[in-house]
Amino acid sequence: MNARTKSIGIIVGTLLVGALLGGVVVGTISRDRVTERERIVRPGGFVEHMRHVVRPTSDEQWEQIRPVFERVGARHRAILDGARAGLAASFDSMLVELKDRLEPEQLERLREEHKRMQSGEGGPPGMHGPHGRPGRHRHGPPAGGPPPDGGPPPDDE
Image (cartoon, rainbow, N blue to C red; front, side):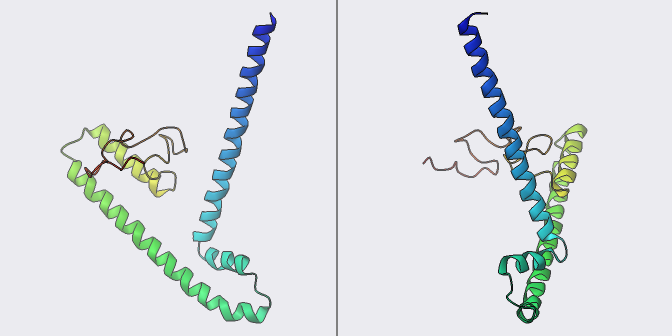
């Protein structure tokens, strides 16, 4: 093996190791963010998160402010539950509307995607790939093309 081949091998190896380490770091950060969001959304999670953020100076102060966090946390849960129900109803309406326009396999893929989205693995276009992992597949129109809702294309910046 000559010096040029060794150099190329070292460069390629370094790039591969860097890509692998970058992927691990991004995956860890993403997982931690999702875990944090899930912890805040669960019952009592918002209150505990706010307690951690505020860091009450005494038990008396905590007892004074806790009811506010509890009330707002309950309101947030109700908003999220309502939004989830509205999104599910909207998705169901879409399936009814598309029923006669899609093949059975296409409808099944939509139903599976809906299940994934409800479980927290799915997401908005461009956020998740075919298996719910970020960055694996880009959904949506090509850059500069019209959005899927038929509106005007985005302004070029």
